[in-house]
Image 1 (cartoon, one colour):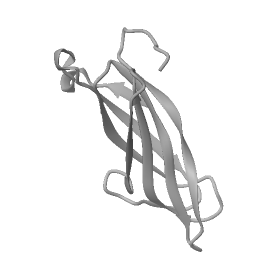
Image 2: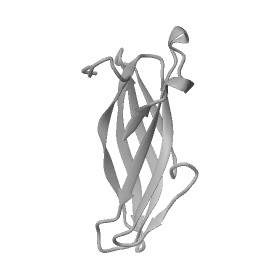
Image 3: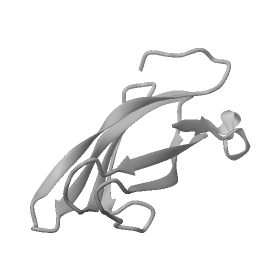
Length: 117
């Protein structure tokens, strides 16, 4: 769930900032751990930035079946809109690794209308 942060943005300097909230829920039967993230962030000109790294917000949460983990992070852009999506790499207790797709979502300023990116 993205939120445009007007107070952290500076349109005259082409700096726009969004916060986004993510909830990860283990709907499986095994305990899993989030190992890493991979984001693809695209601005309104079609230029993209790739962000990879261990965990999310400094954590690598372990989720038992039915548990969830929620976090908030941020995304700067140099255009008034964009989009982002990617994947989390997870690991089961038995060492099996798998990726979970993060559906692409739009980053649009309020009152500008939805733009196709």
